Image (cartoon, rainbow, N blue to C red; front, side):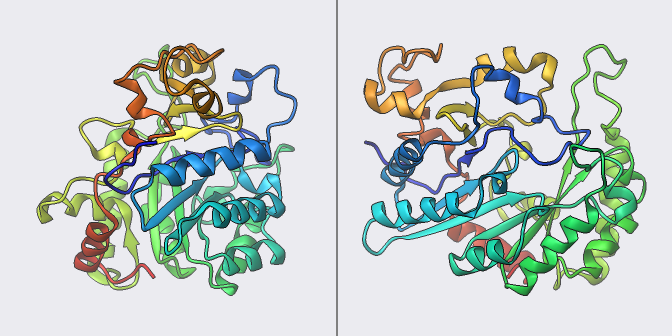
Length: 356
């Protein structure tokens, strides 16, 4: 098993596309249709252990990062992640440290969840689109009910248990019109690290090629500029904003760490609930999901071990050659982050003291 020379990141989706919400702009909510024969979207314990072993074997150390995504990973229940941590400890080399991050909508978080996250030193990413009037129109339950109140309850529990929490704000055609309302809301609730993720909804039949939830480039640019002017004037010491950090990196002689800012995107892979290994999908829609996924599928980490990273793993449709084996989850070579953790710490120390 080869090791990579730098820190890397993999998005693991142990529940696949399963989610307790039905966010109207979500590109992933219909991806369950890619697995029509799957009854329960839950990574089996044997595959979970195999993935963890491969991830650790690929890491250069002494720190290893795991990123748990979805769908909504908390739908699996806290015991699934207790087992994941147990397996990480079982296979972790002596003296190495494992870091876990989990991206969540916050709705299912409770005292038990937050005690666990705090005890195991997880970092959380929480999805919030601003105040209730801008969050609730699109971020709804399967029954169409608003979710802001439940998400904020989860946020406050995370803070009470001192779980480091980043906020991801999806920027859509509604909240893009109110940049300072959005930004000031996050400042008021004590957000320390904020990321903006614009909706890019592919709609080839539309005149501009995108769907109705997508803000225009001009509107998104104006949104960021308005927020930047207020942030730079008063908030650089209290809040870090990911987009602004990225904009500063070239001036500091550093490569971009966020995929979408690089000349070539797609270096962060996704491991699905059944072990399928993809390049990260960021904007594909249901009507193109099958074709897009077929192009992006690199293989399956369960079958990779059995087949020795060569030949055509059964059922994957993805031939693994000497060149493509580097991109396998076993080697993780194409999952590299472009900056080491030390360089990222230097970057944040140079631009802001906000993230804690």
